[in-house]
Structure formats: structure tokens, C-alpha cells
Length: 289
Ligand code: PDD
Image 1 (cartoon, rainbow, N blue to C red):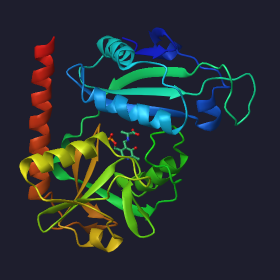
Image 2: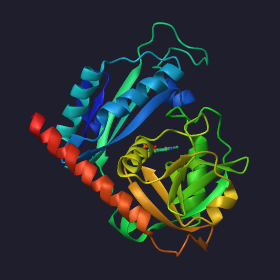
Image 3: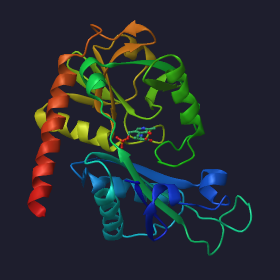
Image 4: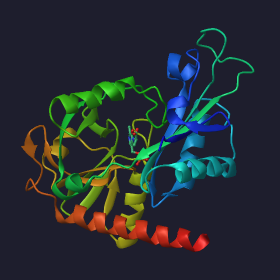
């Protein structure tokens, strides 16, 4: 079955979707996006993702073309038409296609809105056994709190990990942890969960927020503050979080074992809380139907 996409008011098979080469997303990376996990055809934390989309759009002075209800309706339709029960749903808004190429904002040009979904990648082995990561200097711009489609720096940084046979690149700016190239990073030391606090140096992940909420709810001590490179090297545990990967143990950093070199007790605890929360949300949304 061909995958269904939504493009500017119409649903169509993904391979029939077409945008103009003058689209500002294509020319300038001028747009915002979200990636939303879908379990059993229900989007997980959709409201939070749409709220972050709004924050990104506000940050790049692009009017949101849809209300939350309109987004939900479009997202649901793409999910229902999708091939898989568990999906990774992508949505993007760009500043549209002008008749000329000029960096300044065009006038009277409608935004381009695009939604499609693919199968949610199975992360069973990574979740169980953990992943290897490497570190690199964070050379991105200083508005990393916005989820924009200008991702070339992330692309190059992530490729460094892939070329080295690793799953992710951990980024350090001025010797301090910012995040992963496509994820957030947590540190556990002596039973305390640590993460950088939300600011312009990192994207406040929806999973990052949920992990902090679950830690608070279950009484896991937590500290949000700058984390020095040296602290990563002596951590008991490192974790990677993102919507499509949930919570993954990092067992090796730059070729050195993290802690015991095996997933630790704190990550197992958080994975269990995360799974329980997901099931609870699924049960609650099933009752709404
Ligand atoms: N990436 N930081 C960066 C730079 C990211 O790209 C992502 C997610 C995160 C985690 O955010 P969340 O928990 O909301 O997924 C943090 C997505 C999945 C992507 O670009 O594909």
C-alpha cells in the first residue's frame, strides 16, 4: 500500500507529493518540523509536540497555519491511512514558495504544510544492550531550542558517529554538554540524574521533559545544570532520549566504557517508568474513543 502524505490541503500517496523548487524549505532550510511517535495508531504526546511547534514558529516569525484541532485532524488521517500500527510521524511547515529567491520574508505567500509517516524503528537491541557514542564540538548556531529544518550541522555531526560505527554524536560547546546531534543526553552519578537545563544551547525534547517529570514523580534526585566534559568521562550512566528512541543506555563514549560498560540500574528503572506511562496514556486515550 503506498504511504499517504498530506500536502497543502490534500491527501495523496507519498510518491505523488510535489513541492516547488522555490520552496524556502528547499532553498534556505526556512521552516519548522516535529517528529511524533505513534503507538497502535495513537500519536503519543501530540499536544506537547504541537505546543513546541508553536514555539518554533513563534521563534522564526512564521504564522501557524492551523489550529490544534486542525493539526490533530490531519495527523489522525495520515495515521489511519498508514501501513503500520506504530509509526514515526513527521510534520513540517515552511515559509512557502515565492516567485523569486530572496532571503527576506516573502509577502502574501502561503506556507507549505507537509505530513507523512513511516514505520517506527524497532529499538529492541539498542534498548536492551545500549549504544556507543562519540563526542564532538558543537558548532551549530545559538538557537538550538528551535526545531527548524536547517539541519546541516546536525547532519554532519551525526554522520561522524555513523562513520565511526557509533549510534550518536554527543555535542560539547565550550567544554559543556549540550545534547546529542539528534537527541538529548542525561548523566547519572551517585544516584543523581543530571541534564543541561533548557536554554538556547539545546532542544528541549518532549522525551527530555517526560523523563524529568517521571524522575520527579518517582523521587529520583535530579539536577539541571551545566555539565562539564570531564563529568561525562566519570559518569555511572549516560542515557540518550528522543521521541523515536525513547530512553537508550549509552555504554561506550569515545571508545571508553561508561560505568561498568553495561546498562545500569537507573536506566532500567527509567525505561520501566517510561513504558508504564506509555501504557497508561494508551489506556486513557482508548477510553476517549
Ligand atoms: N530529533 N535534540 C535534537 C537536536 C533533536 O533532533 C531531537 C529529536 C531531540 C529530542 O527531542 P524529542 O524528545 O522531542 O524527540 C533533541 C528528532 C527525533 C529528529 O530530528 O528526527
